Amino acid sequence: MELPQTINTGERFQELKIKGNGENGKVVERVSLQKGDIYSISAWVKLRNEKERAVRITLRGKNVRYVDGGQVMAKNGCWSLLKGGFIVNVSAPVDIFFKSDGSAAAEISVQNVRFQRFNKTQWRLQQDQVIEKIRKSKVRFQLSFQNKSPVEGSFISIKQIRPSFLLGCAMNYRILESDSYREWFVSRFRLTSFTNEMKWYTTEEVRGQENYTLADAMMQLAEENKVLVKGHTVLWDDKKWQPIWVKSITDPDDLKNVTFNRMNSVMKRYKGRLIGWDVINENLHYSYYEDMLGKNASAMIYSLASKIDPDIPLFINEYNTVEYAKEGVGSPINVKNKMEEIVSYPGNMNIKGGIGAQAHFVPAQPNLPCMRSALDTLGSLGFPVWLTEVDMPKCPDQVKYMEEVLREAYSHPAVQGIILYAGPEMSGFNKLTLADNDFNNTKAGDLIDKLLQEWQQEPAEIPVEYHEHNDEEQSRIIGFSPEVSLLHGHYTVTVTNPSMKNFSTTFSLEVTTESGQLQVVQLELDV
Image (tube, rainbow, N blue to C red; front, side, top):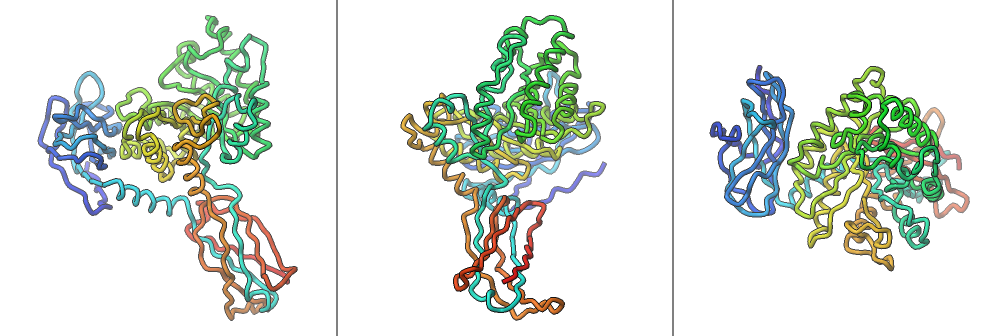
């Protein structure tokens, strides 16, 4: 089979040579890495002696021991593109290995190994260029008037009501007890999920005695303040987090009945009020339902969930998927395969799937090129990808690292939303704390406020440009606005003319990806 061609889109690509076989797999020539720089790497790989096996990129050097930088599911007889990269905390020469997962090493062919170095400024510039392309569209207004008078001096005022991409924040029951917490939250966020209040062990602590008091009150609070809610979670695949009475069930039929009762209860209660559901939390790392109900338990549960609420995305929600390159269980490949397994089950082909990556980062430099590669894999199914529980333990560079993670997610076309696992100090979020007990911003809080402002379109006022252009069929005068680049979202647009007291027209506008790179908005005004 002919090797596919790699498109070189950068100016600093370096072609690396294959040295041969090492004790851990294929080895390419030694390269020198500089502390703090970002290294992107790609290669075409295939297997010679096995049908399918995960192959990963790994670094090894004198002061760098087995840093993983990405993986791909390689196959026999056809080439697969492995993408990833590294950021190292020392300057050192290193060897790059391509190694297979599993106890026995697979025979790997590797070609077209390409290596590219960025400093942080260059990486940020690349992100900003992508953001301009995927999060914005150009808009031009074409206004039709009865006569020339109202055209001259008219202005178009544009105000965003809600951005399409939302940076949200989790909330917990303490928001019901504190007016200050509530005011702090609703003044910032338009998206949330509840930490524990919708979970089964909260709503049915005793079998047959349901209590939705906390979840209902938090749902009401969100709706009254126009905060969208993502449901978390219908079920959890970890036996540890089942209601105590569920853990004691030994009869699979009994467990199936109570599980389906739970699904019907919680999903029907909030149907039409949520923008998505985490259906089975962490069902790659754990397998309680599979162990009790059989290997197709996840697929059957998602099937029922889709029948109960077919109109919203039904998410997988896993950890160590984008935040930990060395992960085996919750790797992007495995998450993708799990979602494929669910939707390929008989009757499930029309399920609206979703990929949730929890993104609990360790307090260290995040591997941004590896995160980008992971998001590529997760997004390859075409389902929406969300970062659902983003946090990082406190460390000296927490704010810097968090900004890098959030910008990396925002600049990826597959990512459609982010929810922080964070809050003010009094709410108990002790890792990513956004405000102190007096609700004054921490440095992390300042970062989030900055991004919330940056990712929402600033109000704009643009002139209507008069052109000697007549609509001959209707004898109307046509005015145009300059092109304006707008972040995707919902807008209120008002046309006014300061010299005409009674002239004001307001209408709604949605700017979306589907609008294309240039959206022409036509409006007929009778003045």
